[in-house]
Image (cartoon, rainbow, N blue to C red):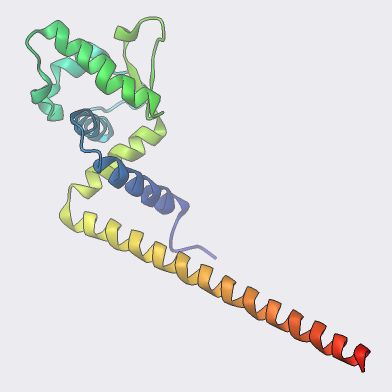
Length: 175
């Protein structure tokens, strides 16, 4: 029997919730990271997922990534901001890894979780998809709470029956 909902769906839903949580911070770095992940997950721009993305390549494609506001007063400042601000935070969040830890200019590899973040970000850019993710998230929470309530009610029922049994047994032995 095939399930109509795959495990990937639940992973995407979890990623959606993590994105919503990070959106609450609303920092410029997170906005740039979101754009970078969207760009990396888009096969139109980054076709070879197993290859690293050099810092120079990222800098040269700021406009295609929607990061043109990241340009600083000089190219070296901007490259440093990208390398440490965007890439460094992605690596610490385990959404990416340095391709060469000794030479940070060598580039960055987006992890499978980073690609999933990018795919979900690309999905929720469409308003209809965003509402669909929100609906599924709310429905999942409602089902979880309903299940928790049922488990709690069953536990109370069992405890009540236990007390009833003990009270009946105790009353019988006293008389």
